[in-house]
Image 1: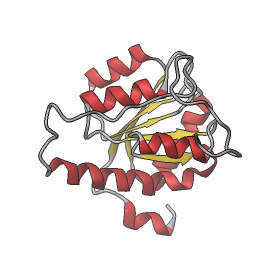
Image 2: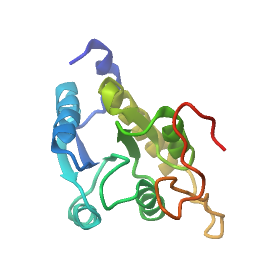
Image 3: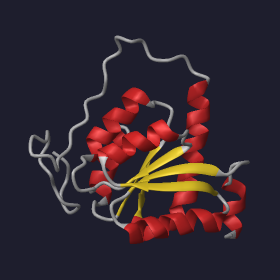
Image 4: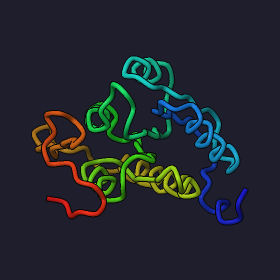
Length: 171
């Protein structure tokens, strides 16, 4: 365990749902969590049906999701979690999108972003997300008629904004 991880560990082991299509990436994420002493249970899913089954099967402390999972759109996943599981942290863990697109995903509802090339940031990101979730439990829920923040996915054919790479500004 890295010395700076000791102060960010929760008091109990966590159940982590990982939406990830690449087993090698999942194993790196799992190893990062296990090495930190954070992980109790980690399950990898790679399609909507598996996400549904996992959510019905147990309670999760945090969800880690890749941006590019074949057959899934990250923004659809994000909408779903906001609607059905508003206090369940969903952290974007991806190696395929740049910082600009990731920051947009955080602005529209992902709890945090950790590049796969910097998994040392994962444990602190999970800690922040768990603290935020605990704080949100104490707040009254939004009014049912409160407007939802629109989420658009530039990778989706019907997309909203134009996809741009990291070298350009957002529209």
